Length: 300
Image (tube, rainbow, N blue to C red; front, side):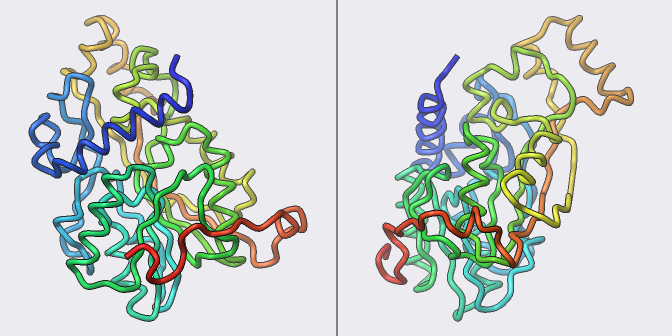
């Protein structure tokens, strides 16, 4: 069983290689720009949805690593401060910038240096002066309290080993009355053990996922209210991938349960939740964090 730090390193190496190679690198492993990879790197899992038509979409920043469109549901207003967790090459951040405009601000946070470098190059090419990209861990964000009006994230929280810390940190950096819209991968029912424990599928968006009910409970326990499931769709695992983990009889059993009423499987969800406008004392009295990089020009 991998430790939390080992899992983070798997994700860092996997996504670092994608950042350096781009969509062509992903396509070279058979995944294509709208899917995550199975362990053999030749079996696509259809996770992502297309950004075509969204204002601010930049094809060069779209590495096909998401599983939803959180910015479409995020209710971003002109002038908002938006934080994108797991910002990658900047895709969702640039869409958010189109919504918040020149008077707002977008901060992308990512733990993969190659992604930060690529996102900063993209922002420089686009001429954006109010979009910053910061290196950091979602479990311990180098950002101050009460910073963001809106937090977005796309298929990233499922990769974080300590989701309680991640959502607690999200709560901390949101302003009172702020909200998040997060797309992620969750599970319903029991999946075959071979799929759940596989480290390579962890970086491929599946093995880090938890049960949907548990996920929503973590959000609530972090202090969020007004929790709304904005979108949900099933992710279908192809037989070619299941054959890497299951016998023929186990695949048949898995498919039969999928067709039943158990709703067993992997799902993409987009969740909305709010930080209460009147923050409880136990949150308000916590020691503020000092930002390591939050000025408008420090990351350019």
